[in-house]
Image 1: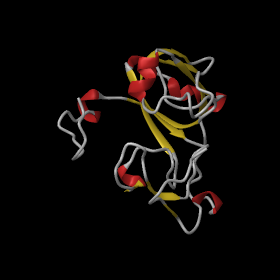
Image 2: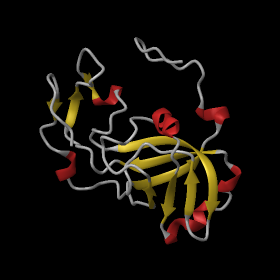
Image 3: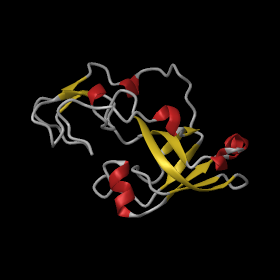
Length: 168
């Protein structure tokens, strides 16, 4: 699913083969229109431009945790990008001239493949555990680790930059 590129380096031990130490549980899964890496948008901007919504399906034991979420306009979703390799530590992105460390990239390939998504909340059905989203940039069936309300007053930094990258 991830092709090797010049300049990339792997970890000596694949984190997927190491014993677990965080006891992370999945609270649900994403139902998205994306079934292959080739068709899945590369980021939330591209997902919104595609104009296709998604649903976060929360498992029954965690549905009571949705109480009050309908007050939020947007949510932060932490997902587990379960198809991504975990042993790639230096990557060569297609768009970059030089390889970069995974912690300077937003690529799903990383020691702990946690995805971060900010989505517009379209609807909440606590009884059925259905959260309707405006868009998502993950494959159908992607596990969800956590869900949090997005607060523009504390989560947004208008002056944030990355040197050498033009952002509108």
